[in-house]
Image (cartoon, rainbow, N blue to C red; front, side):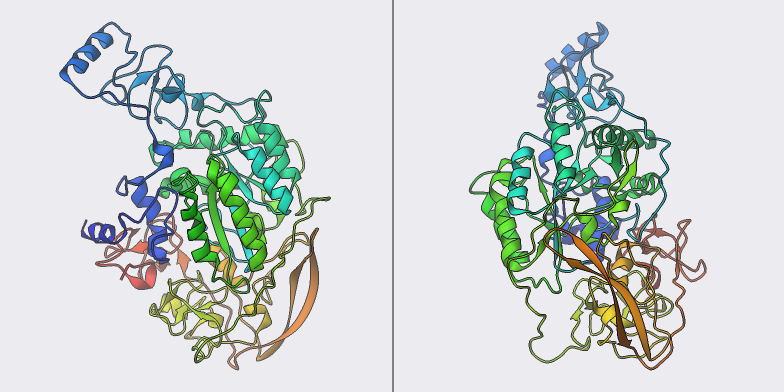
Length: 590
């Protein structure tokens, strides 16, 4: 399709398997990448995709293959679709060759049933989790297109994928020394390390330490398979097996996960919604997995410094990704990042905290009650040693009245559409535009112009401008966690819409978290906020498509739908994001 060729001309060469931080931060760059990757359109430098060696295709090899298959003993030939299976006791590697060494039999590997001995097929011991209730709680979105950003300013959520591994114990020691925390996206049985709940190995002890020392544990699937290559049952197995193993170790399993390879196309998104998972991506990739040498580690430091160096904790936050499989990431980059966090006045927190989610929502009970307070009793989390600077404006004031003008089409949480190139209206889902879908029902007057509110932006509302308190009519979270702004939450959840003030001057009550060196304490505060003189009705957000239909006749938008972000010329959601794309009912590249 022409639009795909044009989009690829812009994006190809910039994308890595674990992120799109090099892509300009435009919603299209984020929303369509998972689909493009899943379709095999984007080929990337991916440290996980190192396959077992493949023999050259020669007529001699082909003849030997025919002979082996005839004798029923394919031990070193090609396998998979069109070639058949390997001999008993042998595995079909990701590259499609038979063998019986870990290079052939360890996960991630092929996703069909030809990998007879593959460790990914072995079920861990523990309580089955398939019938555990999975209610949706809190305001953080489940499934769908996923979450890329924190909503609580001043927080940096450091995350580590693929472990635990042989370096993880030392990594935990580094965090403990700095009194800081991270989120670990745990893989259950990958790279030949064995099952995480095998007590003859150190992995279970590391995971128990993570919980005890205030880190968040999340899922990275059982064996790091590519979701686009699995059928529904195989993908559910990837999630359930990891749940069983984690619950066997800590008594509960997480509601947070990160898709391997950052691939989670529409079917994966649907299954994660069904299973009750938050899909967490990132907005800062320091690329330790690409540069695992002392010299190469400087690249990760440069990426960090370029992003965090000029950032102001008063109006910035980061959701970062690294991997505890990489030596330099653990022993070189991590301490550099932690020192920078201290000096800059940021706070290192779990992903759940940076999203304003109640700790009681981070896990589902199996045999033990889930933690309801973060950090846990006896754990001290350091406060920043640097002094967070006060937001300042340079030059003449912008139409936003002090808020930052959007540069990536997103809005809310300190960012306004007023004066942006994407349109002056901030939609219910936190995106800039100029049509009725953005400017009408659900439009956020605090972050741009709305057709049902005054054309000036409110700047004196303490509830709207605060990055760590909820709006006047939003529900407050439990006393043990930070709460997020309504604007920020609307960008993370398709079901959350902002509220509007009922009068020109009203008193709002909110719960604001006060951070101490050892705990987060909720304080009830009352403040008076001035709003515009017009009385805005309670907004009714345009409905997100539930059947793939969109446009004026359907009365539904593709924004946050499971069918694709763009409403095409045939009034269906998908990836027709340029020619024929309907801007009022979803995302369009132009």
